[in-house]
Amino acid sequence: MIETPASVPAGVSGSSPPRKEPPRAPSQEPPQEPSQEPARLPVPPGAGRFLVLAAVFVCAACGLVYELELVALGSHLAGDSVTHTSVVLSVMVFAMGLGSLLAKRLRTRAAAGFGIVEALLALVGGGSAMALYAYFAWVGGSVAVLIGFSLVIGVLIGAEMPLLMTLIQRIREQDAGGAVADLFAADYVGALVGGLAFPFLLLPLMGQLPGALAVGTVNAVAGGVLVLWLFRGDLSPRSRRALLLVNALVVALLVTGIAVVDSFEQAARRAVYGGEVRAVRNTAVQEIVLTEGVRHSGAGEPAGFGMFLDGRLRVCGGDERRYHEALVHPAMAAGPHGRVLVLGGGDGLALREVLRHPGVESATVVELDPGVVELARTDPVLGRLNRRSLDDPRVRVEKGDAFDWLRSRPDSGRPPYDVIVSDLPDPGASDSSRLYSQEFFGLAARALSERGRLVVHAGPAGERPRTYWTVETTLRTAGLRTAPYAVDGRLSGSTAVPGRPQERDGTAAGGRERPGDWGFVLAAHGAPPPLALGPGGPAPRAFGAADLRRAEARAEQNRIAGLRPSTLTHPRYRD
Image (cartoon, rainbow, N blue to C red; front, side, top):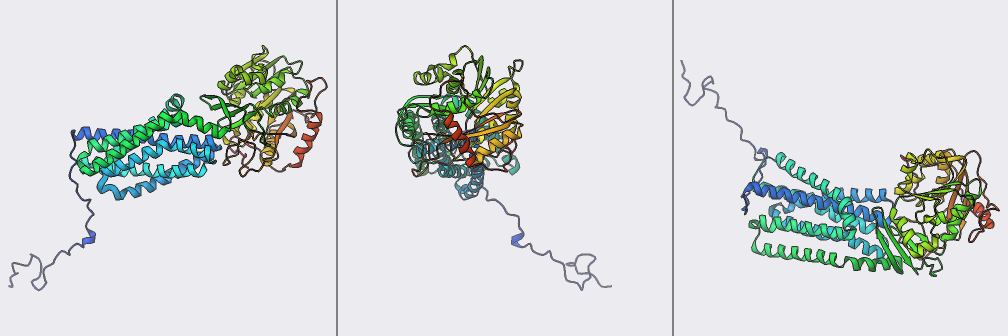
């Protein structure tokens, strides 16, 4: 019998060499994060974690306010809210991903990196609205600058989370999933608070520019306190002094901006409106500016009174009479006009022309912004222009959105209207396209009497023929018969063209005069309404029968066939 050597495991032949476990290749070892020394905090770890999450909450609220500020101001300055909202949000989300990648290089010095990021974010985000408005006022245009601010702010917001993740793990290590859940919970709640505070607190109480500056100040203070106090042990004396100086400078600049913002806005308005600004009213709906002695006409001559809504010229004293006579009189002359509904027109100017016709028994004005109505009643110049029409005993003014008002019809128990005058913003802006949809015109048609007429201001037919003829197509699709006409003689650039410098003098970028017309469409049930001015109507002052015949022919010169109607789910007003 052969004995098995002691070195050989039982059950293994002595002639076989002993087995050895293969060594594990170094590349197969699981990666290990370098362990970090716990942060030296002036408070217990539980309180430190709470302060970090509180900073996440504040920074998230500030970041969302910056996003909403850019969206609101971009839409206000350049029009087309849907496009600019999409651009700002998509660029910012992309930039946030880029910022997260760039922040990986700062994780070894997370406290100093977070301090720098928050100081830059407070300065850029808080000052973005002021800078954007300054560029718009003195240079013109704003889309490229809007995209630039969206990109920079998005990168800085995206860099926050990786650095905060590192900082909170320095306090007390926990599994990555739990840390991410805590951070994102604080982040999302902060975003909710910021999103609600922007429309309900900041805008009504402070306005766009000072509100953004105030939020930037809060952002700088929150970031500075977290780094310079809670994580001061992670900073060298030199880094502490540098960050303290940077944060103090940022806060000083933002506070100085708040102090001079009123003077800045006055100077910017003079640059935008080109003359004396007599009155400014910021309402929950828009900014209303009344000017006097401003050069609005294409020839560069002063045209007197001007009313701007959200920076766009809506009423020009030099041509408003021709516009409102052309809008109102053909519809009033085409049949009975005892009951009249004016949609928009809170300035009282279209109503002035309505009340010049004998036989008007009642007139209802539906205006979204009561601030316009108040100025129309109290401003001496506008009151003279509208002849105090809003104070006529036959007139009832109702506050509300035209679409919602027609849908609910508070006066549905009364007889239908003989004439509906749609004096609303141009259909080119996406936020007003619903007021030129098939559904809207269908509601208006239901409110018309059997012989009633609806007249629609449909934007400039010569400059934007596709938009104009889309309005006409949409009216026909809603079951109405139409009579289009385009009136020349427009002195003012009264339409908003996204991406162009502000219309101060009726010319487009480069000094080229813009086409001078207004496009209107008269519509009725059954047969197309006649385009004429009745002999029993008021005497024409700026628009007569010859002008109407020329307007009918002018509209047909640019007719575009085969267009599709615009609906709520598929707006088609894009030139």
